Length: 239
Image (cartoon, rainbow, N blue to C red; front, top):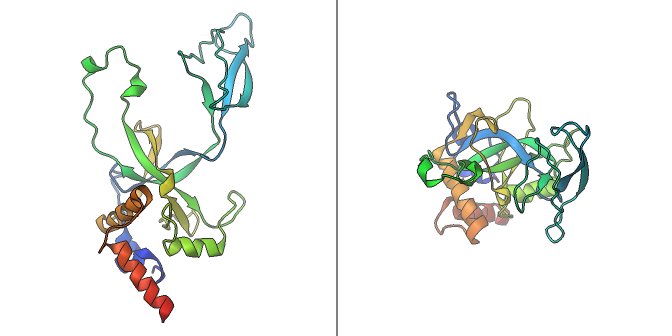
């Protein structure tokens, strides 16, 4: 059972919050796994500075430097087949990790008529998913974990970008924090993600939509689930 002081407890038990997705359908609310960058980190730029083999165009020596928006890397004219660049582009790299994510922005993409994109790079119209990543609360050898008091305050919905949202996983952390302040696109190509066997229920998605409204617009709907939860939480504190 969910604890009484979390927003999930108003409408759901764990088996009502999460629903089976045995067919691994890619739908809004699906729990997927994807590489997610550490967004607080300064990216690094890769600059080819010479060929590793003077006779080969497929390998190169690389200079790695912090990538700063006010001091972009100089584009090299060195032709390296494995690292093509167009005007204004650089190669950038982030540390990343496979994380459980919720699909929060997804529709069955209508293919763009190829006649409308002739001569354009494919990435300009490539379909994407908008996802929010989960971070494990438990401290172990691979994660720093979260402060217990901080987790309690997140569970009480005190921060719009953080949602206490344990995921159904036998091998993962017992508790997870969903980061609505890290909504981000990932490619809709099947190599970019793996769909799990779980998805959020319609009621759970309704609550997440209210919390996203708080994150994006600065407030939750009057008379909604989150507002009702805050009233219940206040009465628990007063008692």
